[in-house]
Length: 171
Image (tube, rainbow, N blue to C red; front, side, top):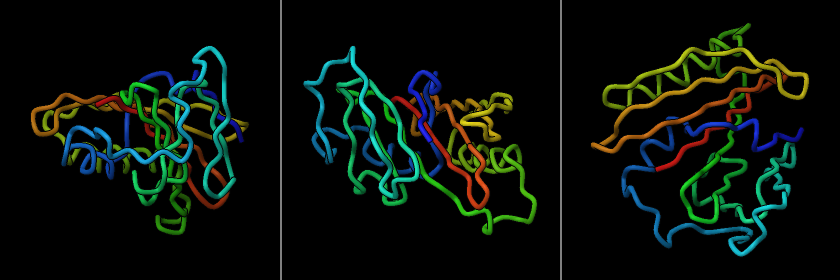
């Protein structure tokens, strides 16, 4: 499955990253890059693969892939060359949830967890979508954490046995 950056329109993230992101608020030199393309051509596209090789993402040629130390549960984490836009992907096994969970219900749970870590959270409507012929949904959430404003765009894509969660944000 290939997910284009164009489909990842706005900026967001998942609840686990909220805590990590704002414990230091600035990543500085702490980003460990598996593949450093900061000098790459932003007008080209490169394909980066998840650690389990189940999916890939197309990003501009000057984006880099981060290693597992960025987030231990992430299958693929990428960052732009200015370290201002992040995209993280994770999967969650459906057996962790009630039987018959839908993409919309899963997304509601994700957004609820995220909003619990924010001050004054504003959650947008969950919109239905289709990616790679699969049921998906997308939503925005924004608020403040420790006085810093942040906005996320979250995508959930349903597979037979798991949900793929893509979260994009900018600190």
